[in-house]
Image (cartoon, rainbow, N blue to C red; front, side):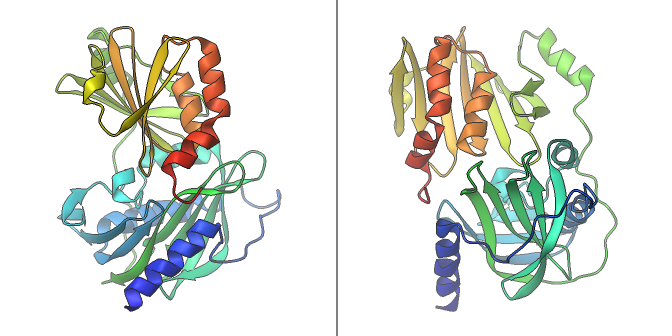
Length: 319
């Protein structure tokens, strides 16, 4: 019963856009990156320390999370990458943290509590000073306890938080690398096999990973806060198999959008099928799509970008 009450309370907090602690935005005289070292330490802790707990997400999911050194993370008993959206973004990769520092001002902004545990708060600020993301980091162990992603109007569009957690140790840990930068040789090899894709998408979304598997090209873009995954397959779109997706036709071009916790889109262009999964605010996802090939009249994408809030309202129960 206590866990159910905790989940319901946190759901209400996220739905109303309330925050766990009152903070003041640091002034320009303070260190530009006071929060980055803490996030790096937190990413290491999330990969290397043993812990388990129950996590609530803004999609309404309640997840059983467990991390065991040497074995890795599981979510609901399935293996998960803690640096990916499916892993709750508990441990951003080194590349994501580099992008975060390049695109945002990252500052430590006070403290609060999550699950009754003292936490340090880190905020990623846009160039206009508005908050793009908040991270609550366990003061004793460094384990990330809560994350929120906000749009330009300050609304929570994505979030995960532990409602109960058990942390087995709080010892200091050495840095654990989560992989290096995508090499130019790897990108050139993919392009030599006929794949075309941008190295950067609008909004500072940098190409972080790229791999060919099973006839698909899988691309991952990030600005440090948002993640946009792009899957490209040669061929035509079989619209009859898109059960659960809704179509919109504009200027002779059809885009399909699936109602889900994230923003998911699929369309065909130039003999390829493009599928986008965005762990991002709607305006960021719409801008990313602008940077990918499509055969529609440009006016369609202008209208889509302006209507991004309406699109998100279909897939976000908290809008």
